Image (cartoon, rainbow, N blue to C red; front, side, top):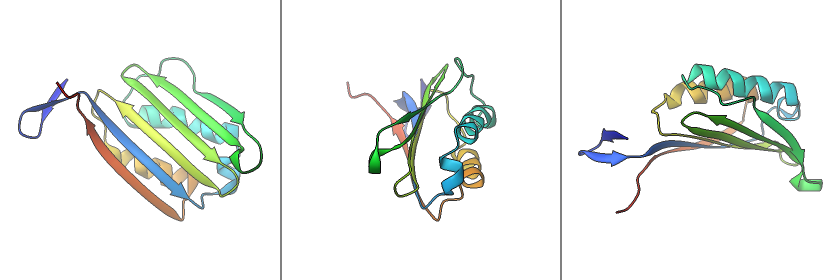
Length: 126
């Protein structure tokens, strides 16, 4: 557990990315998503636990790939919605990471026209 902000103890660091109008070819390509996950793990200095799992789910407006990459300090998950070319990505880790590095790789890989992100410090209530 890391101490930050007024000596409060935080359990984890959570980057939430909501991206719209992404590159349709990139978000429909299993190889691109897999390569992104592997590079992200390296770039934010994490340790992968196994290979990224990238699986196609759904039909119609719900169709798209889902990504799960376990890391020793938690996980990375993403949903790649083909209907609107949207991507919803979460990076959660009890080890701190550079959110700017993660956002840069995301932008370089998926070229979103719209991107909102939220960075949370996760803390249990006792």
